[in-house]
Image (cartoon, rainbow, N blue to C red; front, top):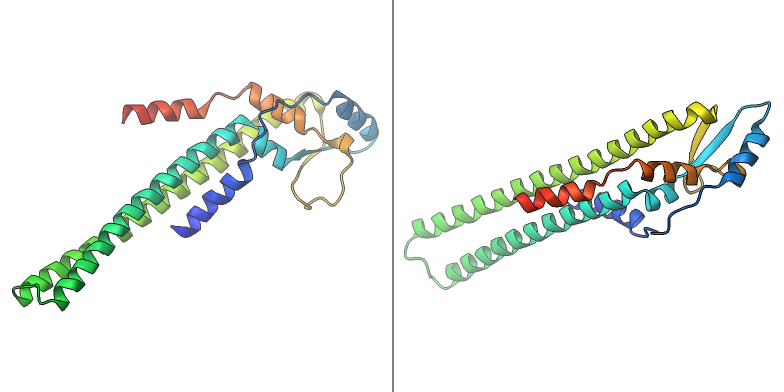
Length: 204
């Protein structure tokens, strides 16, 4: 469970700094980029960090993943504490000759082993569910971005659109930055995922 919790926590940490201010269209940057690219390869880039913190899909899915992660952690903690209590109780009865027979002790020990196995199976299932949700988020983000860029680039006609994150691009002039255009366009066409998730929870 830990590796998926870490994965979800990483996603949450990346998106937790969500900026509620709506970005403005950077018309000057777009014009500069068009001028700079005139006669050559037309290039633009998108700041991934800004996309992750300002695209509503990312912000909402962070809340969803965080909630699922917290629920899974709480469930495992409760089951784990119950198992720990059962083991302590068994050990105390064993030391204090609290069992009336060897068979009784063996029966309780078997029950604890089944409880432990059940917890392990639950942990594996919750890990898998969280991994599937994370994969669903990543796929949804990629699909929405690619779909938008496909329409966006019919008019812009960029030859190359790069993603800029951290220092994967050592230098890029600001005039090639189309991040605001992309974020505004994505948010304009986005239909809330969180609302549908809330409705699902209410039906349960």
